[in-house]
Each structure stands twice: as structure tokens, then as C-alpha cells.
Image (tube, rainbow, N blue to C red; front, side, top):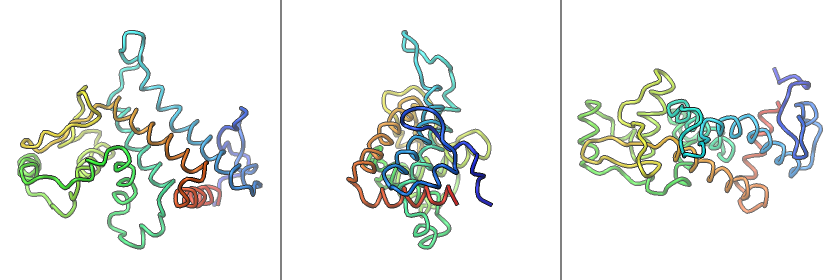
Length: 222
């Protein structure tokens, strides 16, 4: 059953809300994409960003590193769904849909996350988790997906990816077999990628992103 026409969809560029029914009536691609961005700016990025704000002393106004990290992981998957060809992903490998959706976003955040873990890291990871399936951890981004995103979602804890105010949004403890994430820098880097992706979409610099964003919108509206 589709979302009712009168339901709030997001914000207009000039301010004020717009309903699902009003968006459904639009046919101009650029207008529709601008409203999709307005929706995500308002109910995703804008609300989560409140948890990342710092005071004049550089300290969090609301100390919430764990919720911020969880919501960053959620935002990564959401952006992946906007720019990814979801039907193709489902058809290619129905057992790794979530991983296939988020991997392009991690690549945009840091290409080093696409590197294959070293032998030392695998050995350390095995010490942390016991026997591991190397086929499910082909790159460092897979470690975040498998050992942080999944365990956070199902138990609000992580084993193998930890939170700490390190000097980069992620660092690798290679011999120990785990990663460390700074949740505030993690979020800020995702926002930078989000902004660049939307420039590419709205300025028609990436046709694939644009077409997939329109498919994402169509699915929201039907």
C-alpha cells in the first residue's frame, strides 16, 4: 500500500513542507530530485547532525558517540540505496545485498577501505572472533559492515570495530585485528561525501547516480 498523499514528504527549497501527493504530481526530473534531496537533508542529515555539534570549547553539545555512529552507518546505507542499482544488486547476489549497497560509499569516503586485509590482520581478527570466513571480509569496509554495523543493529555493541577519539575517522590496529572509528570524524566525512554525491546528481555529472536516485524516488512514491 503506498504512503497516503497527505503524508509529509520533506521540505521545499523555499521553505515549508511538501506532501507525498504533491511530489507525485511532479514530472520534471530536476524538481523531483531537488525535493528528494530536501527530504534527506531534513529528516536524515539535518536531524543526525544535531548529535555531532560542538560547543565553543570543541566539546559535544550532546555527548552521544554511540548513537551518532549507529546513525552514520544507517546514513551510509541510505545514500548507497540512493545511488545504487538495487534491483541489479539483488539479482547479482541476493546474499550480500547490504554489503554491496554500502561498499561504494565507503570507497568514496576512503579508498583505503577497499584494500584487502593483510595476513597479520586476518590472524588478529581470528583471535578476536575465532574462526572467520575470509570470503565475507574481502576489504576493510567489510569489517565495519560485518563487525560493527551488524552487531550494533542487533545488540548495540561492536566486537572488532571500536569507538575512540582517534585522529582520523578510522585507524587500523593491524596485528590486533581490529579497527577504531572516531564517530564525529566518521559522520563528518560521510556528510562531505553526501554533499559531493548530490552535486554530481543535480549538476548531471554522474548519469548513473542520477538515474538510480530517480528510481529510488519512484520506489518511495509507489
